[in-house]
Length: 225
Ligand code: CTP
Ligand code: CA
Image (cartoon, rainbow, N blue to C red; front, side, top):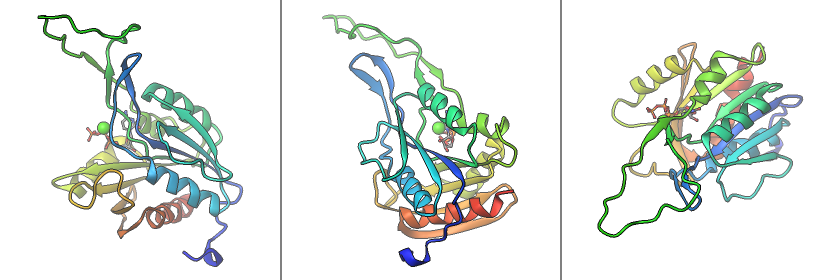
């Protein structure tokens, strides 16, 4: 959008966005992680700020520069991300979970570096589940009328998987991306369908992450009480 047409429809609103990918430590030097770049979450933060919102960006391991005027809260693990998002959500009008949250973390953290021993096979890594932050936020909304948005990358029957996930998580909107060619992690552009709990579907053609972000904010603003 040209700056002259940026709506000021988020003035007076506080929005919380999670971005990046969590890292779950095995020992002081190793972690289980994922390839999320944080670009989509940062684009959501920039566009929300441009539309007048107060923005809290809970950023998991992203190396991107902090957007101007945005309050960035750095975190590493899913447990830390949950703490930070739930704290910021207390007075938020909308929460958008763009972060790739690890579903599992190592069951034990070795406080010293794990060493190899000659002739001894390594132990398997036991995992435990991380909290589902999106489901928790959607179920126990700290504010009546708070809008909760999730993201999902899917393969195969993308829309059916997305619909099932939207229902399971109980969020208001779920941005569904198809993973595959051109649609890789770290890309500058994306293509998506935004599914809503009211049954509507908004396709967003392949384009800059800012455009998808603006569509998300349009749909969020429409749902504010
Ligand atoms: N999410 C979350 N907490 C988790 C896992 C995911 O809040 N422990 C959020 C993500 O930030 C995203 C949405 O849930 O907004 C969907 O993530 P996804 O990994 O697609 O959902 P899962 O329920 O983990 O399903 P899957 O088994 O397909 O990974
Ligand atoms: Ca997952």
